[in-house]
Length: 329
Image 1: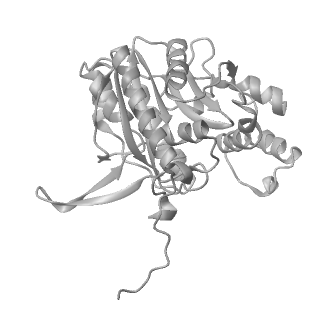
Image 2: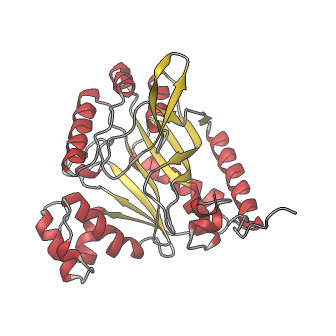
Image 3: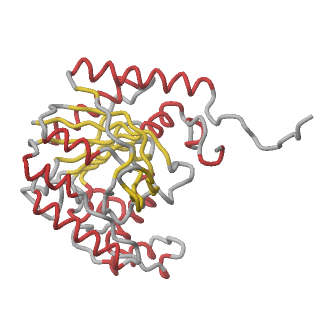
């Protein structure tokens, strides 16, 4: 007889969760079919990766014909760059249900491999896309909230923390964290955006989306490297995030179409990575060439399907909606 193994082989998701995921995917496809948005597929592997210091890649190496020394490749954290190349080639409105990957992220709300819904709408400005995101969520979940709230990023910081996130420097934000009794804040060494992210996740996010869908708009320009800046206030970007039950579900923006400006932002982010001791990432030259060719004015959004399912089922751990999370591999 073979040796009995004690490892738990069972999935994290119940059959109910599996059924609800299948139903959600079917409803997503029906929603976009009705809206005339084309479903596409793009590669999970690429030779470039985003430069955002907050995201680290999972890497692999291809060894095969044409590459005697091997080819460095990255599992994509989003299909965004490939989808923008399709848009520049004239695809029209498109969406994709995709697996995406991030290194170093695992916990109750994170898994290194996760499911993402991403779509792009040529001709849409942010208010139209926000409206469509709300419509889609209400169309695909079992018990959606009827109310919607819109709140500017700076408005929330002023309301909850009494600080102006658009004017405060890193020291002021650190003092805000200390005065609000954030454990260990006095010893942390973060840049300005690092403090903004910590304050947002610790003190503001838990209040958002309670009994409603909350859209947070007008993020600081420094936190929107792929978004167009707001014309009325260039300190902020035409970017939003969606929250429900205190969980961030979606990130969307009006797309930056200027290749030169995008290249400069990639360089600035790689400088930030280097200063923080992170390895600079290769820039996606194919994306920059597509932008030079002409990206139509458009808005796009990425929505985390695992987290949406968590909210729909009332679960507080991503393991409960995945067949096999990192802990069960």
